[in-house]
Image 1 (cartoon, rainbow, N blue to C red):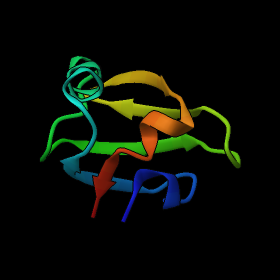
Image 2 (spheres, rainbow, N blue to C red):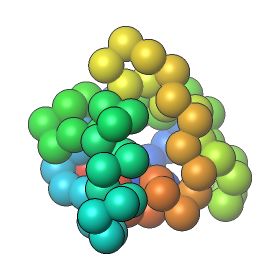
Image 3 (cartoon, rainbow, N blue to C red):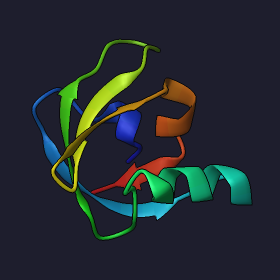
Length: 71
């Protein structure tokens, strides 16, 4: 399932990152690494998402969030 499909307040684990080398590097620099847990703080349709990753709050645009797969 993609990160954009997860409801507010849910905690999930990253399984895969898609996209080109630049997009994957940017996401990994934000802590979005397979095996890392992520909590969805705030999500609204097609708007940036507010997440907690590795103890930090991260704002992630919808397009980038679509590249992150979770379980």
